[in-house]
Length: 140
Image 1 (tube, rainbow, N blue to C red):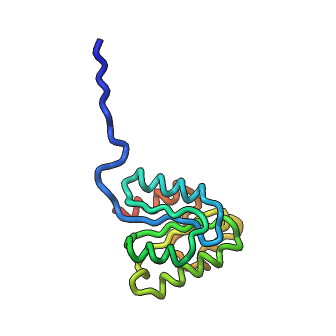
Image 2 (cartoon, rainbow, N blue to C red; image 1 turned 180 degrees about the horizontal axis):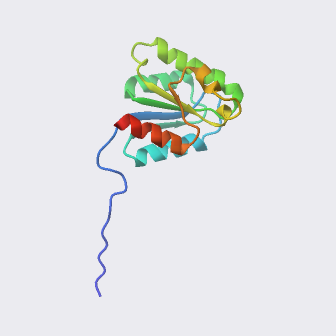
């Protein structure tokens, strides 16, 4: 008996747009952002995952060199919403970075309806399913 193993590629051949996924500065919760990064990569996105507590200057440097279409920013602790807002305000003032679409999410936005809007983000995704739906609309 001969066994033939056929390898299938899990990651799609076509690379979608670029995305950066990170937690807000001073945010030490990274599992949600890490999952988002993995899901985007599996869907074919070219992803850079920065993890927890990424300094703002390092994030901005990467955004300038990588030129992503999307920044997915995770905030778990409510006191870090201000840090996310500062990052987004910096993006909006910078001619090179202002066109990056910012999607924000995380536990910090679950308590108060629409508080995410105070950050200046373009979109809010409460969970992975919402993020996937939002990104699939972007592709079309």
